[in-house]
Length: 114
Image (tube, rainbow, N blue to C red; front, side, top):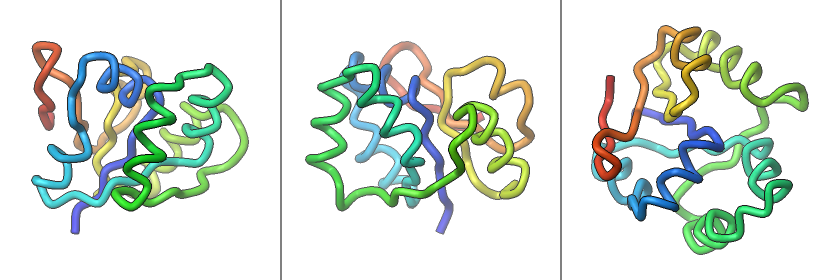
């Protein structure tokens, strides 16, 4: 099964633009991974809608631990160590530094793999 790791800004943007990323990624046969550090960032930034969605969908994804340092740097490291994993991000720095396939938002409503 293909795996996709979600970063903070991807989740926040999907929630704000009402994109059902759980449904779309699952329909592509992907296992969704969310680092606990991303969940902590959402809580720290008081992203209530995103937190509520994750609580509601808690059986739809797996929480992983990528380390306590800077989250973006850890996502890049995780991607380098797991080249087969997809990374769902809108962060230009992450996209430019990884060789993995990426899941992005196109036209503010559609997920696309690049």
